[in-house]
Image: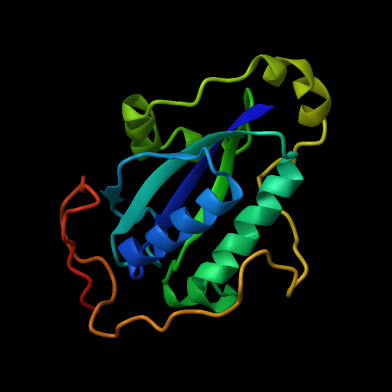
Length: 187
């Protein structure tokens, strides 16, 4: 069993989309722990709206490829499409940043908001079994936390909720929010 760390972010209907992703990930990983949300400025000029970000951690027996497959299924079920990034929209982005002791996405792991959230988050205790089969699994780890997944092989229904068009993209200048904080979603 290995402890994994996920980053989850959105800049479009952010609270709604992250809440959907949290529910779906909780279905796959019942013991998953989520951090509080934080709002961050975009690091790339193609994105003009603030991002809402959280971390998630859980112990799992899944291999890295299986975790990534579940992540990609979750992203599609929440509504992520390939064309979104060209429009400056991030409906949902979930990355496997750490698997066991191996950091898969060092640049993401070192981001200031990730380190801030990690400092406030209570991580799950690794099980005794976690140390025993980690070496063989780490040999199979992907270098960048991505994998190709066949379309239509999702765990979740492809049925999507139509978002309320009166709410859109994050526009607040706040840096930290709690789940009960109202965030403006005007487009």
